[in-house]
Amino acid sequence: MSERKKILLADDDAAFREINRIILESNGYLVDEADSADAALRKLKSEHFDLLVLDLMMEDRDSGFRVAYALKEDQNLKELPILMLTSAPQKTGFNFRFSEDKDWMKVDSYATKPLDPRELLDRVHKLLK
Image 1 (cartoon, rainbow, N blue to C red):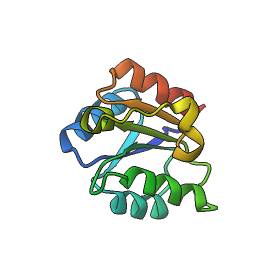
Image 2 (cartoon, one colour):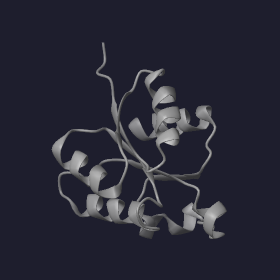
Image 3 (cartoon, one colour):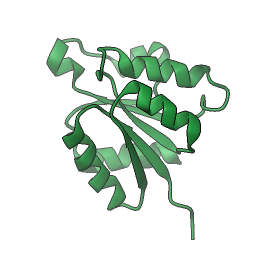
C-alpha cells in the first residue's frame, strides 16, 4: 500500500480551506491547514508535506509570493511543489499569464478561484507524480 500524500492548504479563507480539505481528503490525501503566510512557513519548516496549495493574497497582497520565494531559497524545501490558487484577477483586475510569468512567480502551477474540484484533483495529481 502506498503512503498517503500530505498537503498543506494555506489560505486565509476558512470556508475555502474547509471545502478543499473535504475534496482532497475524500480522495485519499492527508491535509493540514494554515491561515496565514507566517503559519504556513512555520508548518512547512517543522513538518513534512508533499505539496503546498497556496493563496496569493492573505495578510498582504503578495503573501503567497513571499512564501513561494522563501521556499525556493530554502535548500530543504525548494523541491516542494506549489499550486497557487487565487482570486487576485477578480479582486485586482490583474491577470497573470502563467506560461510567461512562472519564472518569477516561483510556483509550479497556477489557477484562479474558484477551481472546479475535478480540476483541483487533476492539478494535485500531476504535481505529486
